[in-house]
Image 1: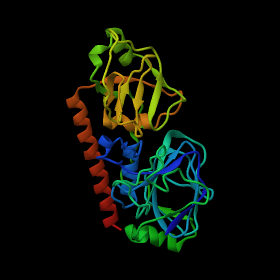
Image 2: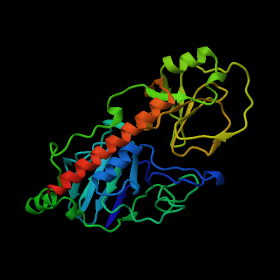
Image 3: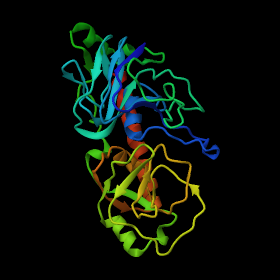
Image 4: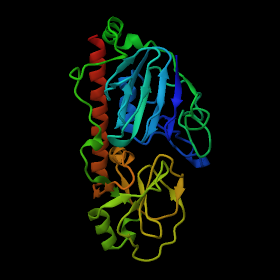
Length: 336
């Protein structure tokens, strides 16, 4: 089975959970910006959560499924539809061969994730199917999708995953069949309920003035338009050091909040560099990275401080939530 790209959208690329183990060689991790949406979409489509999904930014592509396919779309609401019928998100959807999936108005968020049962059959590079756009490798030919691309899908029978959907699709004239809304508990994206991004103190927290620490936790920052998968530049009150600081570059992580000399923080994202030399005032807790991944230019963001122990507990709670979703889907599949 294959998926044909009629229109690519401004930035659609294959991403998975990242390319780990190579940072010491200068190779970035890359991977999805919104891990929650990627993992849930894969679970709904009957995949392991490390299969590649299409990460869709701001405006979606137009795609044609050349055979029946089980899909799931999670993350930003970019008004997906097949024909004139809206496609529900965060639910398994079985589509007919020849169906065209289009996206429309952005209703919420920045990035949507499309999973297809069987995953996208591209060769892993250093153990990952993620696209590293700047270096031009991984994913589909090391680049964003283009008009005319044909994405092969891995082995699997989508109609066997949810037999009831196959029966409904076979007996009716609809373009697709979705699992009923009340079949399992609704899956809400974490960013639906806005809140301050929870952070732990960075390695150089104490190097910043007391006023800068207060500003970081009390003020609102806005996402600069010059933000991308490498980092989100924020605009707000300047954050000053107590005294000039000369640093040797050291390792950075997804969510590291660096402060360059102009005092405006940068939150490092999926395509971050492997090391950085700016002082680090904080690090965003991993459970809240999907919130900033869904932020759009000029959106306001606030920060709150939590302890490392609290951040670890939040991480475990998220993993339990993912496991509950997994069990719910398995139960639904078994009831078919």
